[in-house]
Figure 1 (tube, rainbow, N blue to C red):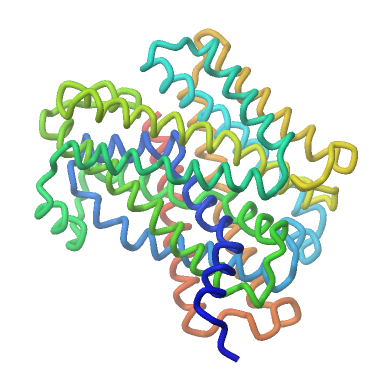
Figure 2 (figure 1 turned 180 degrees about the horizontal axis):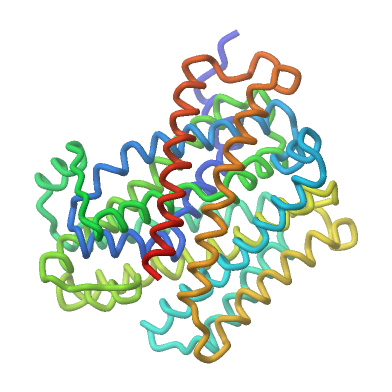
Length: 411
């Protein structure tokens, strides 16, 4: 029996959320900084990478959604069941350390963006931490998800900022569709950074946990797949406009930057004060959004990995470890930023290294699990899909290793 179109639309909006939210968190403070530097340093030369990166992101995220819908279990839960507690412990430890570093970077983004509006970090960071903590502590899964979906829409400020920069759209289109490559050290360093910021280990755990908590099953899987594809396209369209806005202004004027805050400041005299404010607003939104999701994802992952009760719909009494973990990660992340003269670059470096080392293992675990017929039944990968998936994984592993090595050499 064919489902009426209005009903299909209703089901889609009931299922939508995990894919769009997870993909958009990828454009966090670190991601925005990476894309800003790419546009300012290389102009439009790296736009072509966004097409294969979108495909890779869709492939990886779709597998997690499928596993969550079929098994009703999170990725950490499945890794513990199939590979043992010892491997799970080391995986969880690596994720905890990496996500602590990433959360610190998000609160650094909150501080940097609000300083552009004249607000001290000693005011903005504690208020930001209190906001993200209270959001999850006081809300249900549905209410928290609605706030996160609204936050995704605020990324559109980067589209407005890009249009205000008045780029040459003909050249933008050519650079997007025609790949180019260079062995120049600066080009390679930024290329690896752009690729490395696209797929993080925590994303795969979070999206699968979100699918399970939302109660999405096999019958809703098709709608969830659309959710994933929409999220991946949305996040990389935002990335495109960040690169374009910086390329059309900062690169054209030969202005070098080191952070998203530098980009926002430099845009004011070149593209107008509104473009600068919109860029800063996007950074604030991305930082708060990611500062909410990262601790939440980490708490989910660790509790799942050790079979401990977890979930936003649970009370503090029902899931104390989950809520204490969430709280401690936020307190540490925000607290470190308030330390005078904190070596933030070092923190960002080691969190990047931890992500890079962990990602290949997570991707391999995923492919071993999704091709297990006892676990997935008829929903295992097809031969064609496996070829695409393994190629994506191999490429991501090689590029991740390059990212880590390049980071060491740059230091």
